Amino acid sequence: MKPNMFVSLAVLLIDRKKDHANGHFLAGDLLEELEAGRSMSWFCFQVAAAILIRVRVLAYRCLLLLAFSAGWSVLYPLWRSACIGGLSYSLDHFKSLEWPWTSFFPLIYGIVPALLFVWLGFVAYTAICGSMKFTSVQQFACALSFSSGTLLSISFIVLRELRHPQLVIEDVTRSDFFLFDHLYLISIPLTLSLMAALLMSAPDTGGRGGPRQVRWSEGRRRSLISRIAQASDLP
Amino acid sequence: MSHFRSLFRKLLTKLYLFAINEDMAEQRFLGEFELMILLAILRLENVTYGVPLARELSDLRGRDVSLGSVYATLDRLELKGLVKSTLGESTPERGGRAKRFFTVTAAGVRSLHETRRVLSVLWKKLPPGKGEMA
Image (cartoon, rainbow over all chains, first blue to last red; front, top):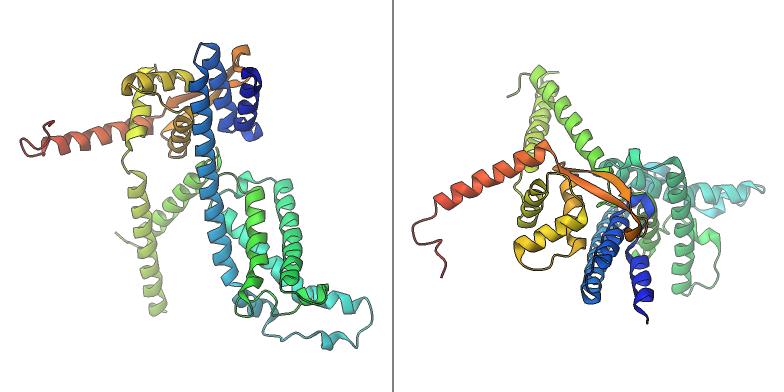
């Protein structure tokens, strides 16, 4: 490989123009140093180090999001009982109804609670990490629609893996489909769906802007608590 | 009603303690590389970008510094509010890419002094002979 080609490839690997991320400036710095007479081995070392650091940051972020998503998915039985109000759902109840109601009810009782649960998890995470204001409406919509797609497609894959005789949407709408105690493989769609939404939209934890929002909101919360505490004569 | 009030006060006390605890967490001391970077930025007239900063650090440490780790640390410092960054001009030798200039904030300077004070106290309190080089 020619040196010029190698440099272009290396710069392509580390340059991420999105949101003026560090890779963009780093690539500029490396090119400037190379122009100033730095050796090719120095350049290779820098590129390798930058890629390793990026991989480490990404792995940490993925693990964090996966842990949150898995933890959130464990709450699904509670959510479902709160959402449906303990109604034991069976498709037989709706067989007497005419079309299209026969199609709507399975969706309402099966998929909608799962989707709402994933979306609520997404909103909870963005609110907790303070990135809500840095997520645009388009990003939000894109993340939520992507998570819905992930939920359905992973659900079908799980059914397939379980060697289910027939892949029908009604199986996904069963009330116990996403439950942890039914078959904990089934919680995978919920976890992956939430993680996909978070990966797509939540700003990088090492990114710029987001955490400043956290600091600001913490400051506001602290001052609010201090004011209430003073009003209540607390120390 | 009084039971509710006492419960509210207990909850508020816990929240207040939590807020104080968070305040303390924000004042945590700088790591070795963070300290070096903040001092190097100040040495470079408090406005610098990646290349001179990495060169300065390499000179001070006597070995090459990874630019990636410099940027990762600068990001962390920016999150803590100890440095702030601005976009600079782009030049042809950088492939048309802009520079990112860093400045130490007032909070950064305070944090440096605090770390220095604590380190000085620790050094002074070291028993005689314990800190000698072998």
